[in-house]
Image (cartoon, rainbow over all chains, first blue to last red; front, side):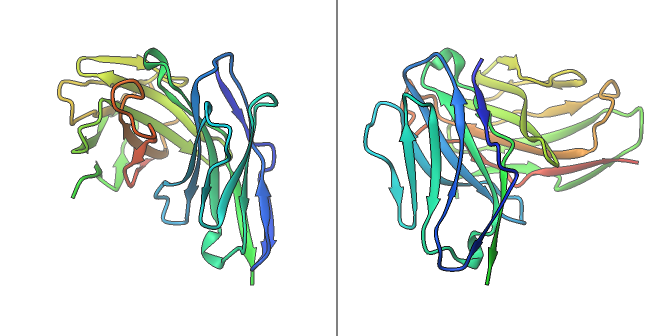
Length: 116
Length: 117
């Protein structure tokens, strides 16, 4: 079974600085997707970034980028130029590409606070 | 607008009663999911369905039941057998990675807060 681990329950960053959120996962599959979701106080889940395992290039979306290390099964999220609006809970998630097992598995999340 | 809708937003239930949470999507997604969120626990999978008339248990299915009679709908019933039902429930849908799942990410509803009184 796939598992996703986010070992840091909380992190804090100064506004305008950079922060990295860690995530590791365990799987025996070779083809899969990884995601970072953001959950602000409204509790609406918002997709931040997506990475396909077959792609060697790390995904980027504006101020958000990932460091995907397939061999190490590591998938960290870097937030550059942090803004007050980035304060939220962040979840790492895994999804198999195999249609027979396409469930989406989440980590426990990390609460990010941004200091003005 | 395409999206996924959960209702109601807040729900109160007396102990011993069954209650059904609604989830509807018009994104033409094959897969739908129900998650439960408790403080410090992340999102735990209750049930998921990849096609109409078929669904699988997730990690914490005991005390819950679902149906998938239509592609658009995936209601969750919290039965009286669920010992601690007070929680935030999230429904999600996604395309199938194999059949046109561009990105294959899940889209979420706004959630239902269930409280047992």
